[in-house]
Length: 464
Image 1 (cartoon, rainbow, N blue to C red):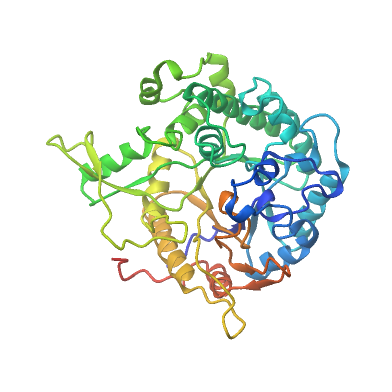
Image 2 (image 1 turned 45 degrees about the vertical axis):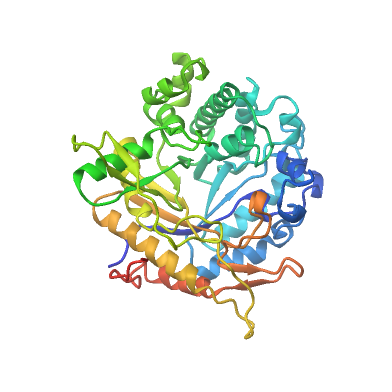
């Protein structure tokens, strides 16, 4: 069985993770440049100074994407490459870089899908207060207006923020990502509020100023859950667990707090009770600004917890997480391998938010190297993607409106605090020579795209 005829197959990346050239042609520093230069923050002192050198080698990368037959490339724009100080003076060389990248994609029939913000806030704006500043939404609006004015004659697909739960939770609460802050909960929630206002301002700018009719989305991430069994009670429990804010170390990592204001026009009642007096002050005007009409819901899905209902009610009101057996499959990131996440995740999210879904990230951190025959064999990635895509096909067959899938990622790249220790790419990166070597999974994914997924088997041996 194939995917829908109009289904979009793509690959993804992010500016800081692949571009390199942190001060090339006038780019300003971002919070991730500063974080990398802080001793002990990133694995073995790795930095994004070179990364995949895509700033210089974008033509090679576009050729690799074209070789897959991919219909779309999701990439982000480096804010500080366009505005070295975040606002004010423009860096024309930065604007020209993305002109060249976009044109190269279009010349090969690849649709550019632009993410406006993928974590690399200009350091100059962080020094002015960053996401804690009430001016942050206006800064983002100004940046978005410049991007739209320059590229919207050729770019029609837009995402505002990538994974705010991560850049706010891990960067401002836990301190394990840039900018490395460990703020009180009230301050983290204030920064979150500003980020959601920035999203709303950006959507308004795109709607009002895009030269070509835009398709606009949001790319959040959160804790998904899947049911232990297919009973109604377990399904209800998994649905509830997927949207309930949990009492855990990273309480920012949820969908409802970020998505309910953006898509439903209000903060979730359960979240307001959970956060109490720490919840941000919020006017109706704020909520109206956040809740701009969207065309699609981008979701980054790698795994999920497993939940079962408890108690006698049978409605999923009481639940517990099912512990994993010893030896449960994990990636090199120690993320659990749960293919059912691509079945239940889109289903639960579409039920709640009523928008077409696009899988904006999904992929495997694996243990890859050049083998004795000069090739890079990555059978685990092929198996992982087979299982996840089979689950995605089933949820589409069962009525969930999923419009596309972006594999993370086209290249091995800088994996944030993990540096270059983890490899997610379909293409192997030799970081010394910058040589790109397509892995076995690259050829496999090319065939998936060519057959529109028909080659993916349906009857799979269970993982355990």
